[in-house]
Image (cartoon, rainbow, N blue to C red; front, side, top):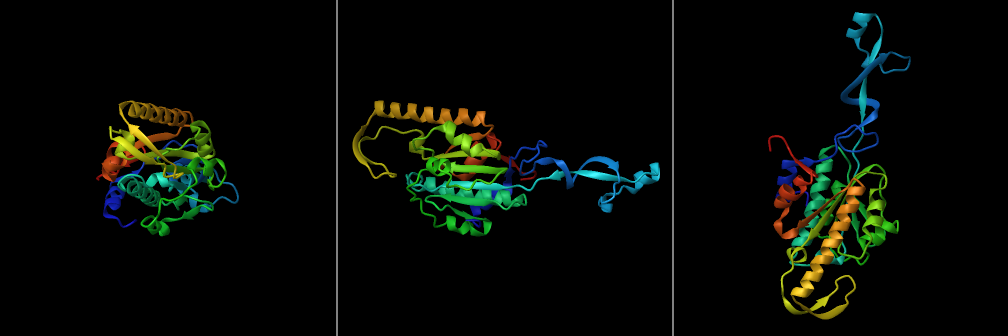
Length: 287
């Protein structure tokens, strides 16, 4: 999917909205408190035996007759993990949901790669978890969304190798019973940033009256005859609102970002409207 024209257009138009403050240990465009070889000058100090002579400032020596070295702020290599929920609920609808999830995963991988990172894509279906780099992105083209394990059980059960000090991007519908507090606390632990992208179909986001239906739970295969009327839709919307409020509240507490998106809106609209508004993406200069 890395050569998908739609994905390439957004990759050429945006960059990751990583925090820019110089906080030690963070990833992406962040700058550490240590000294290293990035291009941002930090300070001078007197030369000490063992210092790299490439950083000697000869003009300062000419002025003061003292050997001084230029210190530069250490630039931390970005680590990015894209966690893609490939459980069965992600395949519901007309295919727009799974398509957008694939596109978002590929887009985030390529944008992280543009920063010089070596991002990893983790396909969350059944243990052991599949983990690939940019060179393995083509597996998304034929990836089946048939996993039976729920994202929260994989995360809280320790089945997902979460890299320390990484930018973690989770793509899921989050439509499974879970405790948002416990899930987000685990996902945000030792992370430099956490972004949660909730992908819903148009019907899941705003259902309409459809009358009597046989509903089948794609996760458990349990079937039930239900009448979907105005009262049922009202109850569903209230439960969805509580779920999203819980994810939003706990994301704020963890300094994470939660963004719900509608699959049928398409990748370009989701990037332009939802992800840029949440500052997950930034427009590239000149794009």
